[in-house]
Length: 338
Image (cartoon, rainbow, N blue to C red):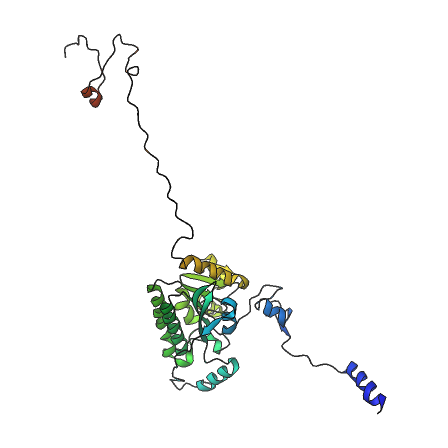
């Protein structure tokens, strides 16, 4: 056994050999370009601790973040026809679907699950922007209808978390038909008297914004989320004017009455639980106390001393007719002829 070859040389090589570092340990913030350790990013719900920029979350992470103790059940959505128009651009639409399914491990851009939030039964439909930009096709329309039917069946509120670029153009008119279908799904929930809440995330644009995303009883937006119909560049080219700073961002929309609340992602779950508790509470939380009614004050009849005229020599005793008529009383002596 050679001591130099078997022991010393490996030690020296280990000092000068570059270790391979996994590529997913550090992430760069798209806003401030700061490097964030992957554990810190996950602990902070993919929000940059330096600038507060909210990065995108997939549907699975959304569901785990909102439900109690990650306990929820994902329902199986109805099967839909694949590539009904046999569409092809640079690639076949069927090939694009297979690539997205392989990349994300999901069948389409929406996931519907039911479980408990703060002890209350809740149905959540979350979008995954990583699946073809979260575009809304036939499968997404079926998912929203399934979520609405499940909410009505369980008498539970429905929360939708869109993250989409709009309708899926590879499905043509069939994708645009999901706009009225999603509106019908929302109407089913509202007719049942159940809360329908929309959590607007980055981005929420196109046909999604023009349909179910703006029909909620309450609209809650994450900080800095892009929300709108057409892109800012398209709008500027159309109206030939420069848009104001922060246009189509959640803070700008809240100032103009399009959004009810803009909150940090870490406060989203607590806010939703508080809202659901207020909307779903059938009775007051405290005992109703009946306030005592004030009795009307009794007016004492006038005494004889009150009826004495200090300027007159005689005491005037009013009759009932004189009292009721309200005419001035005169002495009982001689009266001038009238």
